[in-house]
Length: 354
Image (cartoon, helix red, strand yellow):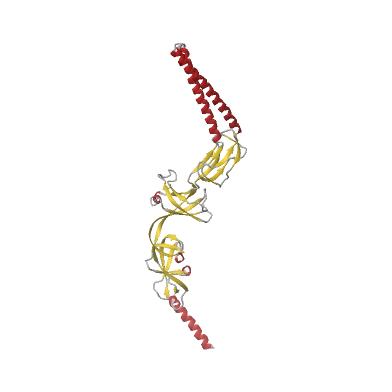
């Protein structure tokens, strides 16, 4: 028993005396998986934020005043077509006025007919010298006045009929009703807003870019939008602002947002503009370890099943899905730890499995 204790004590002292790397040489710190870096063609990106707004808005206002709203036929969110009736005004008063003006037109027509007959009679009498020139001039003038009075009466009747036409409030274009202020029974005034439409249901994202970012963006570039509700939408750049905002020193990029998705006017979204594709050296995101504010990958220096890893600082770039671009610090084809990198330290011995 005494000899056994001496042997155990000697073994413990020997293990303490051995260097740390010699102790770990036979026992890997953990089992990991490895992956080789790969070259891919990735689009360059520009990130910006901006609001989603209607492409254009149409304001539908009252064109007649003093009439009561008797029908409201559209609500917020309704899709309407061009010329569709949205609301109606009461027409009783206007129709009574129309009838009065129609009678005035008939009276003016009768007066003109009488004046024309007097003019022809006066011209006939003048040829036989049976009427003075002054009387003839008066007859001609009366005919001209009657003709003008008829034209004025017809114009007033046409104006009243136009007002009757305007009692039907119609959509000037196809679109989606975004606001409604028309109220049943209310008496509207001329020019009062009744409805507001998003023309053709089209939305656009208005991203704000710096001058350097704007120089890299082209019309037709795709945009990936991260919406506030967690969903994503796509857009395409339609137009670039011709000038910078004098206050913010930012320029606006206008990107069309297809309809039918979850994007809504008024949302504030972060957009990633996808530019021309360039070559990228790619590793899985799980290979990146952040320590002391720096990014590291653990390099597998050889193809053996058990090897010592090297902590290599790297500079990362673009991200796409579960992959990250390495801009500096790695060579193409280098093997790095994929799973388990977060638990390693520089110089740890690992067992690499497929």
